[in-house]
Length: 128
Image (cartoon, rainbow, N blue to C red):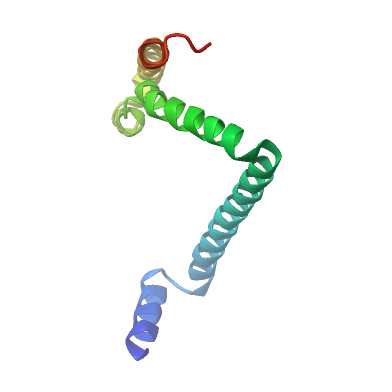
């Protein structure tokens, strides 16, 4: 326990005093409260929808959500961190960088939609 207290004290000293340390702890607290609130609301909403729809319809809804999440990842293509890095490196080209990122994401979204439709038609050809 004393090692933990020593780590906290050394972190407080490195952060340059009490006010900055408190500000950081306050931000951590707000972020944690936000995360817990979102998870609680999501859980309550899921339980309410599951009770309302019943097992069969809720299973279909869950399958649809998972299916779209798989193909929705094509829209992102993992370029968020690349865009941030390039914006930091060359802020003068921000319009070009953001425009290119938009076009890439739009192309990925279209590819994801087409892929999802093709897979649905192959998996269940007669099901509207």
